[in-house]
Image 1 (cartoon, one colour):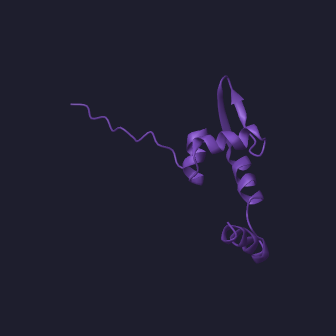
Image 2 (cartoon, one colour):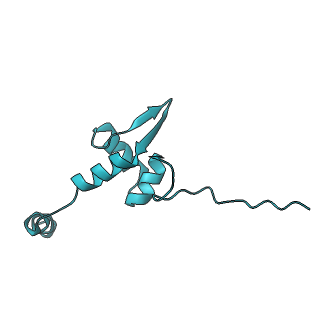
Length: 86
């Protein structure tokens, strides 16, 4: 008798693959796929295109995340103050 073990097809950010799909990036960032496509369209997120499919290099994703970090308390307080003014 032969036993075959099936591995899950889901990929995580710690995966060995150097490139991520738009769906994987949306799962990592907890954003919608449409938001990721918006960042791609606005050239905020660097991608590689293979045929009709986009792939995001992990280095590009790390750069994107670092560019969106709020480093100073003043920056964060401006965001929260704007929400309070609505």
